[in-house]
Length: 472
Image (tube, rainbow, N blue to C red):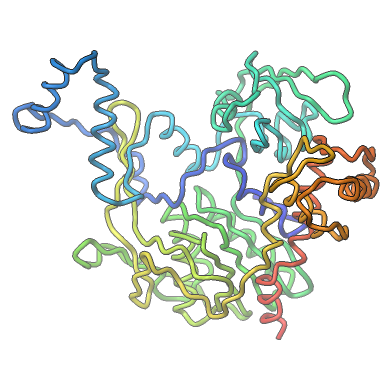
């Protein structure tokens, strides 16, 4: 578990990182009904061709008479995808063996690797964060390093998921990488021994005296336990109010959401699971005593699934207020079945309702207080332009000028990278102890990212509104 001590929004950048905490592929809002279902073995399926009728008739025609040889495996994959697409359910899908591996990593909250978060930045693979006490930290990797080679393969133009797969590997194995670092003339050549990396999902801090803050990024194995420990930590500081931040939380494991609910939701129902006929399959309850402090839950349009379960239960209990924007509206439960090829079938088996019986599917939760964020807040998620030269124009120049303006530099938004824009960029570099070149090198872009993230925290009107409620 990690207790965040610095800025509230150090984890916000995770939204734009496709791979989180040691390079995982994101999978939105996937649930398991129970641990048994999640680890269920492949089913043995036997079906004679003549039972399928029309399907095999078409198959045989193509196999024998198509103008070129057909790839059987490709045909099977296409048939499966077409069958699932006909359900018109974005949460029902086939997972390849590689995607299945990523899913297991995502839901168990740990994997073996070097311990970095990476981001793709205009064709380059940059290190966004180095996990504390990880192999990457031990060999001296730092934020902003550009990974140019992994296992002898150039990373120029390589997609983020491919870079992730090359960096991952069994604990105890080694991987050779080459890194370019700002200010270093020669690239760094490193051999790193991979290790098991634990990925945190719960981050807590004291905002100010009596006001605590907990952010849950997603619901993986261990989230319930970490949340309980984080809440106990804050309560020992003497809580008068708690902000529970579920913004951008796409969901995760149902049982971990229930574990969080058992701690924070007052005694009563947390959620109920119903089948397609509306029959209740399961109810989940909390026995927790009502908290003697106020609770405000932050939500937005990317709050989904397991996160909506917690937010909805707290809203229905009347013991918490929701602040932000309407949520995503995913109220279905998925079953993950292993398949014989090492892949998996993720399919919807039921949906959940709030304690008050509200069906959130495609509707979402409505906040008690709707509070939007200024457009400048989202600049922190944009890729900082690079390779701009005097006289360049267009959207990339406008983006840079908006970033500098947001950071307090009175640059005019002209869309042209002129001398004045270059002078303000130099001023930014001098203010951050960088060589004032007026060019967007790796170090400058990384300092811009950090400055934008820090400034975004100061214009987070949703958080400010929540704190005002707790103090008022």
